[in-house]
Image 1 (cartoon, rainbow, N blue to C red):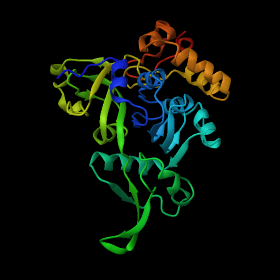
Image 2: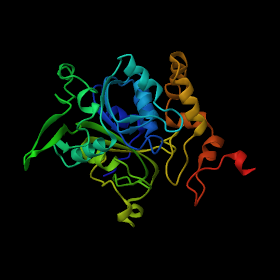
Image 3: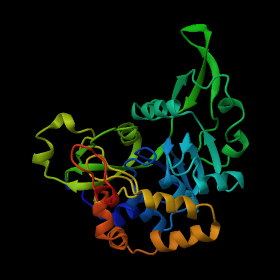
Image 4: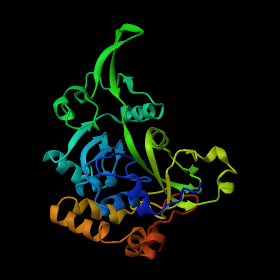
Length: 319
C-alpha cells in the first residue's frame, strides 16, 4: 500500500480542530517543523498538545493560538532560550491550560499508551509539587473531554498494601507527528540516531503522520530490517519533506540552524515581532518548498553535517 501523501493533504486529512496531538523528537533534535508550520497555515485551533522534551515546535503552535491545553515536561530551545517565550507568556497570562509532569514520567506515559494501558503506576512524583500544586483542576477538566478527569490518584500497591503509588492516566493521542530520516512508500521508517519517545508515540496514537528526509524503496529499507523502528502497519501518511525538521537538527543529515534559533528567541520576546515572524516565515510561504526557497540553498547547504563529525562547520571556521 502506498502511503505517500502531500504535506497539505496529510494535515487536512488527519489533523482536526480539537484533536490531541503529540510531537516526536527532542528539543532541537529531529522536530517535525514542516508539519507544524502546515498546521498553522491551515488554521487548526483548540489542539490539546502533548509534549515531553519540547522546543520551538510546541512554542510555535502555542504562539499561533492553535492550542487550548499543553501537557508538558519541558519546553525550550536548549542553549538559546531557558524557557520558550510564547509558552511562558501564554501560561503566565492564563491563555492556555498547563499540565506538568516530570520527563521520566512522560516517557513512561507514552510507553503505557503504546502498550494500551489505561494508566501507569509510578513513585517519581510522590512528595513533589507536581502532584499537589501544578496542574489543571478537576472542575476545569470536566469541561474538556480530551483531558482525563484527574491528573493522578494516590493509592496502595495491590500486591503490597504498605507500598504507596501514584497512578497517572496515559495520554489519549489522536495524531502523532514524527520526522525521520528514511521512509518507504509502504510506511516502513528508519530513525538514525536517538529514537527518543517516537516509537511509543507512534504505537499509542490513532493516526501517525511521518515526514522524512528521503523516500527509499521498500527493497532498500528492508535490506537491514534491524535498523528500522516503525513498522509499515503504523503510519497513515508518509510526507517527503527534505529539511523538514529545520531549524532543528537531523542526525547524519544537517545541524540545527544557530542563527535561526537566536532570531526565534529574539522575536519570541515581543508580541508584534512574533506576529511579523509568523506572517513572514510560517503563513507567508505557501508550502514547505517555498519556505526552503526563502531560506536559500546556500544557507541550507551550510547546515549539512560533515561525515565523521555529524555536525556542520560554519564557513568562518573553515577559512
